[in-house]
Each structure stands twice: as structure tokens, then as C-alpha cells.
Image 1 (cartoon, helix red, strand yellow):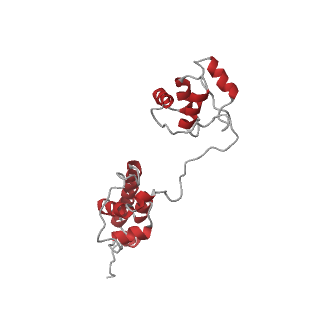
Image 2 (cartoon, rainbow, N blue to C red; image 1 turned 90 degrees about the vertical axis):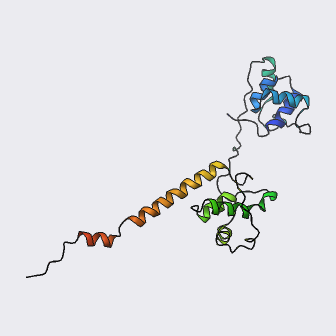
Image 3 (cartoon, rainbow, N blue to C red; image 1 turned 180 degrees about the vertical axis):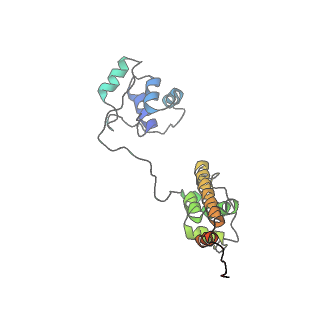
Length: 201
């Protein structure tokens, strides 16, 4: 189900400008009714500016009027021709400025605790670069002497799920390499298949 782009701002506007119940507003905005009531009472987000769902094309005045007459009615989002916002799946990860200085420490934590992770995996997890990861792993980084390991999950550079997926992928790669090393080469297999050499009498 689609919800307003700015749920709290929309809820604040609906509280101030309509006779809708808290439950109706909460369901439309994907909020808890108590959260809507707290907005109405000014207990939370006191400085929030209400946003009209009519101007944004998310509701019509007729739809609001219909639901004001019937407290059991549910607000229906207006259909829009505009494309929906999509979550960004590729490209560099944005890191808040306050956390950027923590990246080298996070890299150090990962290369020490999970040496099986490839440099490119570590770089993706913390939003760093492969050369930086390589220099920290090989202790050639300019800050190598003063770096302290920091868990990237605890400071929000990556999630536990992302780290878990990366570790599973790294383990599969390690297992593949181990199997490839154990398997005899094609030349050895050919030598094993040749019949023993017998000298003519």
C-alpha cells in the first residue's frame, strides 16, 4: 500500500485542517494513533510544518469530505502519473560527515576480525575505496600507527544483515578456492590415466 511521502507533516495538516479521526489519519499516514494524538497535542515534533496532501496530489478534497462523514471509512490515496521514488541500490553509499573519520577504523576492524573478506567487500560495507582497504591491510596507510578498530555495525556504517551476507559470500569464495587447490590438475589426471610403461622384451 502507498503512503504519503512525508507522513508526519501530512498527519499534522490533516489534524489541523480536517475533522478526520486520529485512527483514520494514522492508517493513511502509516503511523500509530497515539503518535497522531501526540502530534495533535503538540507533545512531539512541535516545530513540524504541515503539508497539504491535496496540493501534493495524494488526496482529494472530496475523499477527505467522504471520510469526515463516516468515521469507519478509510482514506484512499489518489492515483498519480508521477513515477514513485525507488530505493537506491547501486552507487557509492552516503556517509554522514561526522562518521567519515571513523571509516579507516571500521576497515581495520573488518580486516582483522574477518580476514576472509575481500578488499572490495570491505570497501562496499564501509563506503571506502579498495586502495584504502589494501593500505590498511598492509599497514602502509598514513594513519596506520594511530588507527583503532571500530565495529562498523555499531556506528551505523553498515547493517548486521549486510555484514552477514558479505561473510557468507566470502566463505563461499574461500571454499571454492580450497576445492580448486585440492583438485588434481588436468596434467596429473592424464598421467594417472596412462597405462604403465612396459619395456619390450
